[in-house]
Length: 117
Image 1 (cartoon, rainbow, N blue to C red):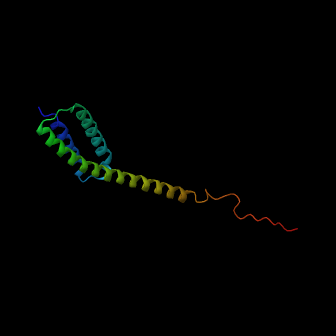
Image 2: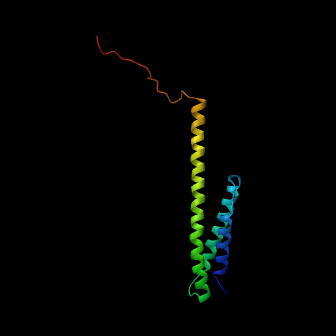
C-alpha cells in the first residue's frame, strides 16, 4: 500500500483551497480549513517512514513540487492578512485623532519664560 498517497491528496486539497478566489469576509473560514488540512498533513507525514518504493519516491517528488506552490500561496495569504491588520490599525489611529484631536498635545504648549531681569 502506498503510504504517501493520502499525504499527496491532502496537499492537492490544500493547494486547490489556496487557489480559490476568496473574499475578505470568508477569510476566517478559509484559514480554519487551511489549519485543519495542515494538521491532517502533519499526522499523515508522521506515518511515512522509510524504506520507500519507487512509486512512493515519485509521488514524494511531486509532493515537494506541490509544497513549494502551497508555501508561496500561504505567504501571499499571510501578506494579505498583515496588510489588513496595518489598515485596521491606521483606521483606528485616525478615528482616535478625529474624535479627540487635542489628546496628544503637551501641557506646556505656548508657555514663555523670560530670563531677563
